[in-house]
Amino acid sequence: MHASSHPGNMGGRSVGEKGSKTPLNSSFLKAVQSYIEYYADGSTHTARAKRLDLNHFVEFLTRYKGVSTPQKLKLRDWDFSSVQSFVDERLRLGEAPATVARRLATIKHMGRTLSERIKGFVNPAKEVKNPKVSLLKPKALTEDEVAQVKKIAEQRRKERDSFIRFRNETIFGLLIDTGLRADEVRLLRMGQLSSECEWIRNVRTKGRRYRNVYITSEFRPRMCEYLKRREAELKRFFPKLTKAIDRTLPVFISTYGASAENVDSFFMGAKTLWRAINELSSGVSLHPHLLRHSFAVSLLESCKDIRLVAQALGHGDVRTTMRYTERSDEELAKVLEKSRTSRNVK
Image 1 (spheres, rainbow, N blue to C red):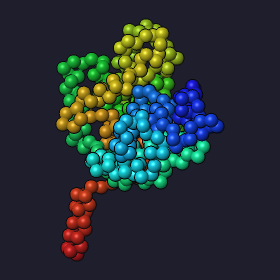
Image 2 (image 1 turned 135 degrees about the vertical axis):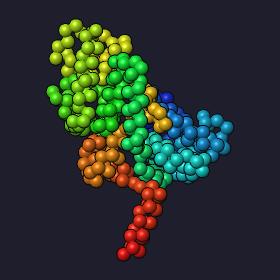
Image 3 (image 1 turned 90 degrees about the vertical axis):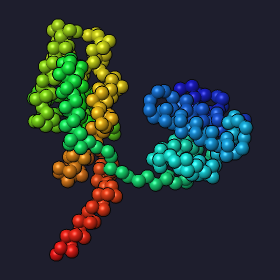
Image 4 (image 1 turned 60 degrees about the vertical axis):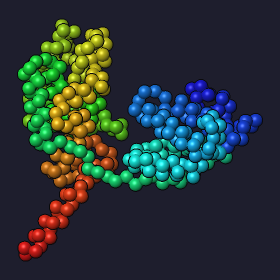
């Protein structure tokens, strides 16, 4: 790590050290740039989001403090009032409370990292309250919509029965059957599958825990059929594919640019898997997480057991799963009407 890349370093000298500038007179923009270099570098979704959040805040603070350029902003310009006003403005502009809460979280994190490293600096965003985020039940496919997608996939395969189309249709089915996340499916290796295709072992969750995932008897034959076609596809690269090698290969393979010398070259890319699902869209635009939501809603309606659903989804906190229990105003109205009607009948 270079000294200049550390969020507590400005131009190679730590703010607050003897002989350096007074912390609050230091450049705010340099603090932001150092934070981005250390915490938000790269092309991941999180890194891009952090950079966007801070760009919005720098632009706002420049206007709010009435300076001509961001380069003239000082750390002292960043205070509780400016952060609160930024939150209020984003809400007035019509941004979703969840988006504004994410932007505030980025600003708070930058303030926390600087307060830990700059003597005498207090996080200006610490006491700013998050906007209230209303929990809405995640969108899910209805049974009719799932049936329609399956019909589209089948029709596409009849037009051209390629391995890729069969693979994509199988991925859709597995997501609906298990509720796995896109990356959990993409990174599955053959060594995780039980011999009868009944269990997927040691699936790593977002919380870096592991769980076993059950494949239902209804979907199991489809998985077995896919594995046969997968084996035939791999013979183009491995004339004598041993079980030892196969266990290291992904379940859902992509042979584009693949090489037998590099087993990891057979993994599908994240965008490739997303497109595999999206290409089956009809009336509803499909994406892998929508299928996870559909699995969760269907399972909850079937078993009425929120803890069981949490376990199936790999949630570390059941409160995360509780959002699937949220109901719309229309659903609430129907229940109230029904309760009044039944009471009056008695």
